[in-house]
Length: 339
Picture (cartoon, rainbow, N blue to C red):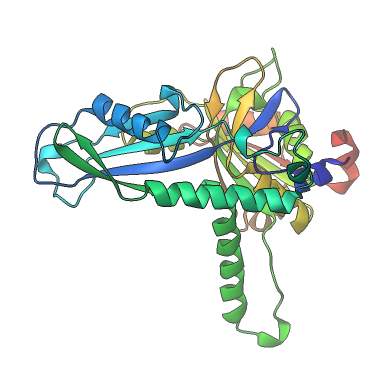
């Protein structure tokens, strides 16, 4: 089976192996926000709030599969005494990584005959039901009440993301000044942020991401036309809500332009709702994935191609400039990247 066909037939609860010992592991990620539900101004105990929520998740009616303590994080927001009553007092992230209970079971004839579309429908119905049950629940912590809201991050909601690009290009088509020459456009470029640079590097040679290694990895999701890699240290700083200094080059941002819309579509669907894992590492990376609205490669199509080494040397010579590792995959050289 070709890489494109494998990505197209990937089920939402099924892991997807990638080259270089990497894999895409399915999981559900939910963003939690906590508000005070009464007039109490007692200090917030993060550990107590987390314990109460874990107990609620594990008991009926939810009765979720085992949710390890490490898959739920709660963080108190600063300056709680200065916050208005309608403002949140804490945020959290819940991961449900064990989705095996949603897969067809061996020996169940009816389940084994489920099509990928039916299994996908079952997954989305379960996800919707879980979000509805968690939305606006109240947690009572020794007489202090907190209300919780739940949302799925945009990077994890493939259906919402698909609607976003359909609406974007429909609006662009309607706003075209020349209705006679209107051309229906569709996206072709995926942006992946917050992935470890060393996982895309050449083993025992460098900790910097390699264009060839990165191309090989993403080729498992479809045929690639263009590829661009750059440092992405700002994402972690933004998520932390602080300006603490980070070691440059730990994370990278990858832009992948696919040769056709079907490969783009299947790759985006495979990347949404999954974590990146590497064999031999216990780290589970929740990258951020979206699609390119700005036409990065179309705007850069007249720029000369530069090799990884040339780009590194050029960026190193200018203080403070973000490092880029670019590659234009021309038709004459595609056989270099064939599996």
